[in-house]
Length: 576
Ligand code: PEP
Ligand code: MG
Image (cartoon, rainbow, N blue to C red; front, side, top):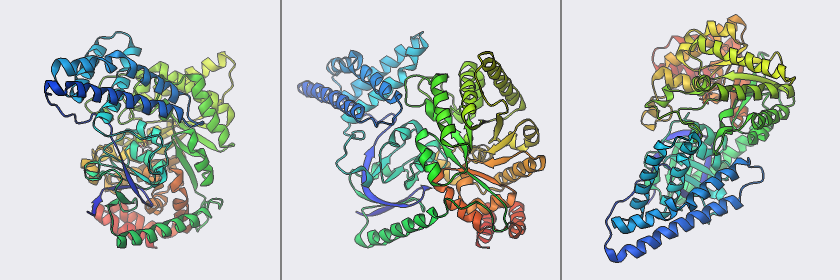
């Protein structure tokens, strides 16, 4: 049966391929009591699931790509040790027998027992391993429930597989970056959740917030994913398939045309130069940065170095990673953002208790100031890397001047410690702050005076201005970059920074949306940072824009009180 699903568009293009279902997070587990005669079979079923999980892990370990960080292997080793421990491989068998229950139920009861014991553990390192235990249990559960993880060699070549998931964490997405899927769709998530941002960085069509995709789509069904319109068509008929093949070709032709712009200088029609920079999460993103002609890195989300590993990277490891990016850019600027952990980017290695509202909790700079050792280590690593390229440091989630003052104090202390050891660094390193909380946007003047540059994080600015969780699909339709309040804050920040002569960029997803390029230029923005895959489409808009022509409509947009009015004026602005 053919049917169509609508979600939130994340990353453009059209993919046609076969569904590959993956599960994640706490799975729904069936509970039932077994008759005595089926007990032996149930234990065999459990043993087989453990065996299959072990084989899957071994196969993953055997297929680690040569360029993968060394931690991936260590991470798999820890999981293998946990799997082989009798508390997971043997005790559930006894529970099946003593409680006469199904294997899934026995396993989750044993997980609860283990987690209770973890709470008692004094040793912080061991206590932190509980997330690993949960992940291993989830793997076994997936086997039991007939939901295998991603096989190392799927029956369908990966480039024609479409990943269908209920939800995935940003950490999972990092692992999926190593697979070549044709497209990616999920039930939950918002367009600017970090999972979606990473999906975008895979540079494949993606749609989120489909609600029941994982339930309604079956393994190996044929799908069309239209990442531009946020549409997924399941089992399309020949007619629809032919139509989308034409659209797919057209999209590819347009992409090829855009590639010709990569080396052209970025200037508006009236000759105003504009800087287009790239956002990256990992070192592996660098080739894309170069191919798309980015003139620097406006946002290196350093927290992704900390994910999918059992330990935290030390100063030397961080230094090597930052230095590699700095050197890779050959003198072009590299803006390294200090850790923005918390909210939807949680670490397994750190424990700060579960916050009821993690996006409003101990996140980003708040977490760094609460963990001075962690912060000091990162600042030293960034400073050391600054000797090998043009490195800037960017501080996320500032809401009060006192946070900035404390941060500058930490930077000073890190510099002094390097001086004492005669370790070189760029003494004039520029320190910038992200404007992504309305409080910071409203008092941007004070921040601009104390910082070398500003970068507007529109993803969080929208979330906090409109009180809409950027990861929550239930309110994804309310997440609106064109809400007049958001536009006022963005325009105010740009105008104030320009008046004070403090360089300002937009590095949130608004910066990479070609439909908003003219508007932001009209606000006075001259520096954009975005995922490299969007860079040439934005550049095309810059090249076609004539700034003096934009003023009238841009000031009308800023006076509009309704998002719909903004939308119609924006359509006019884009058609000048
Ligand atoms: C933002 O909030 O706009 C931003 C660029 O940071 P992140 O998406 O990593 O929160
Ligand atoms: Mg942010």
